[in-house]
Length: 167
Image (cartoon, rainbow, N blue to C red; front, top):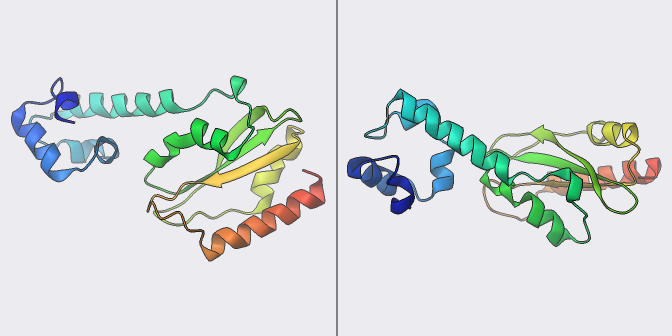
């Protein structure tokens, strides 16, 4: 991490970051105001770092044009950037009959450990774009991947709604 920070910070700032943050992911989630607390970072550098972090996230996001989903591993490979999110996000992938992603969208943004959704938010787009199937997934910012009672409940509700709609 120290080598990656050298173009942006002098030793006191690097020392501060390595002592207070365990990863670059953690550093990338700071606000501009929080970045200003790091020795050697002024307003311009804080803005530039936020822009770099935003660009990095954008580069990690997949381009729908070439994504074909054959397995859960494919979903993970294309959307593993979500692990960088500090809030829970529920994403829907809308696929055609050949399992090509037609569209993906964030259906819901939650807090540290919750995300509120209703089947209508998931299936309104599915009906509008006439997709064949939908894959729903979300991240766990806590890094505990055990499904909650709410996860199990909404999965059942989404499955029932999808069956009813033929999706």
